[in-house]
Image 1 (tube, rainbow, N blue to C red):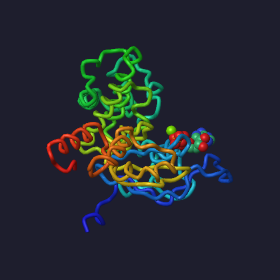
Image 2 (cartoon, rainbow, N blue to C red):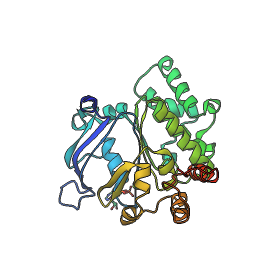
Image 3 (cartoon, rainbow, N blue to C red):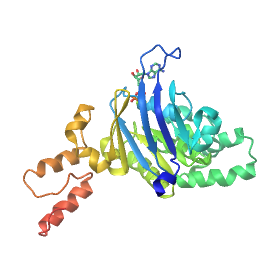
Image 4 (cartoon, rainbow, N blue to C red):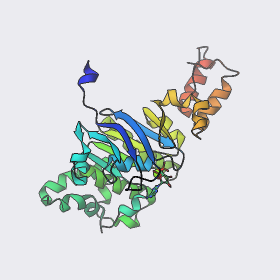
Length: 287
Ligand SMILES: Nc1ncnc2c1ncn2[C@@H]1O[C@H](COP(=O)(O)OP(=O)(O)O)[C@@H](O)[C@H]1O
Ligand SMILES: [Mg+2]
């Protein structure tokens, strides 16, 4: 009953899309229907060209569906301008460096708000809160381009956060980042999720999807082919292979160990596998 009454953060209803606006071209997204509930933490995975970025751009209004509808908190996005949509959905694009152009981190995060005509008095607390959320308060006066790669990605996240949208979409937020920075960025996403944000991210790094997302959607050639919890999705190696995806290394290792050891599930992280092995060593079931 509760579920029926809840308006999803995003609802996609029979969406199809083609880059050929005359409609004659091959579709890139085909008949996609899915809902994202409030405060979900969702990863979208799939091989290159599966349509992930195109789907995100449809969600954010940068592209518009050829047929079908997108509802944002129950409101049809067709009736919303890109700027109205951006008040509901923040979008951190792939290659965030291209989104950087201001002289200071603060100005960067304040840019869109100034553009909207807000006063400096209204802007300051929002920008400071956003910089705080990504751990960049101390860098407010720094030149964005001079920062490290991980820091630069955080500046872009802060500038999107300052806009105040509660649904946040990230296209490969950890791409091109080293292990430590990937983790730091994903930890920011996790913290935002903990504060009530709805998070959708695309990644090619399976252990990030496995460890951070609660829900994983697998895309293959124009549409989702799997949709479930991370544990559910990554234990179905055969079906994943059909979409051209290997589970995380640690999950595969765990699965191999299960041939010899009574472990009860496929682990999603090294920590989880470690716990299972310790339990086993202590005489437990390895669950
Ligand atoms: N601007 C564009 N014009 C025409 N075709 C495009 C454009 N961008 C992407 N495509 C095509 O759409 C398909 C899906 O691409 P994309 O959404 O970028 O996939 P993914 O993000 O999963 O790698 C691919 O076949 C790609 O070549
Ligand atoms: Mg892409």
